[in-house]
Image (cartoon, rainbow, N blue to C red; front, side):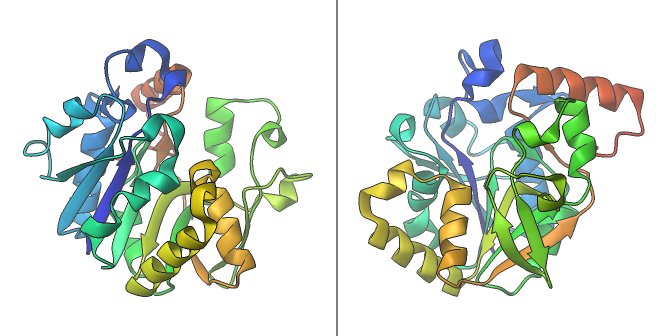
Length: 254
């Protein structure tokens, strides 16, 4: 199985941390985020890994032969005007339609989560966190309805994702940013993107997943309980480091 890490964005909400570095090279628990991802994916059994860079791409390319696992460096030259959906298309030729794990570059997780996802046989599949409220409380506090998104899965299949919820009952988990495509999944993905044309550049990943659902595509939903983090702001880094130092952190991925 192959794996693709989508690492084209700058991550401006990390402020000074990404002045001269791409978001995936921000350090958490004394290692770049990219190293945690490479280690988890390789330990899960990904035989080949590609990283799609954009902002400060040269600094990612320099690491292609080092770190926890070697990788092929690809590039989304239009990173500033597109998004992760477009970045994934930059890896389509490299993937060659083979079964593939796809990871956002701002998350950390254990190999066990990736292995669980590998076992799902649906054309498209994703992991989601049942303990999302604990992570939310640590990161944000306040009312989770402020910017949480709807998520509902039934019988191992995704039923709803990415809309603004009206109640917590509409948020049954949190999409983590870890996906899998089978060969059939790749075919569906690419055909759908071709049909969308230039709209691909303006479509985020959850919006695209909603489109697939509306077209009747089966999307597997694999639950996990904690043990992952998303790094979106400089405040996230500070809170995670403090939680790791205190111990008993429900989302410690190490």
